[in-house]
Image 1: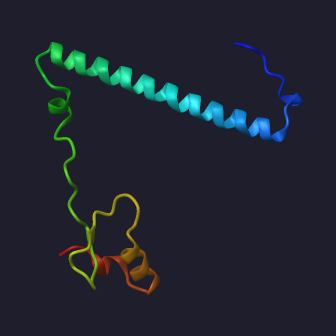
Image 2: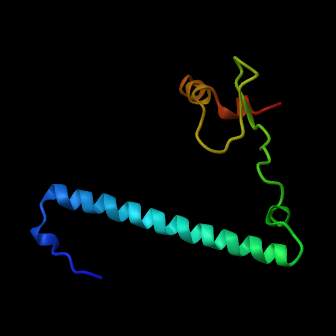
Image 3: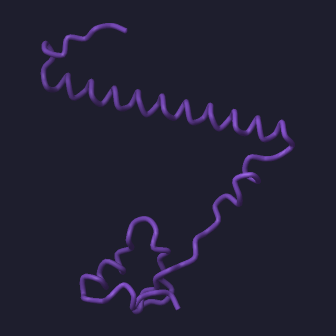
Length: 102
C-alpha cells in the first residue's frame, strides 16, 4: 500500500479522497456479500436444497398495523419510514393507538 501524505493535500482533494475511499469500501463489501451468497447457495444445493427454501419465503409481505382514518385504503406495517398520512395525523394530535388496523 502506498503512503499518502494527507498534510500536503488541499480540502477539495481530501474530500475527493474521502468519497473514493467510501466508494471502494462499499464496493468491497458488496463483493464480499456476493461471494458469501454464492458460497451459501452452493452449500445448500450440495445438500439438495435451494437457499431460498431454507431461509423461508422471500418477499413475504408484512401485515398492516396502522390504517389511515381518512382513507382506509392507506395502511402501514409500522416498519420502515412513516408514511406522510401517519405523520400528519400524529402532528394533528391523533394517538397512534387510535389508528391501529382493525
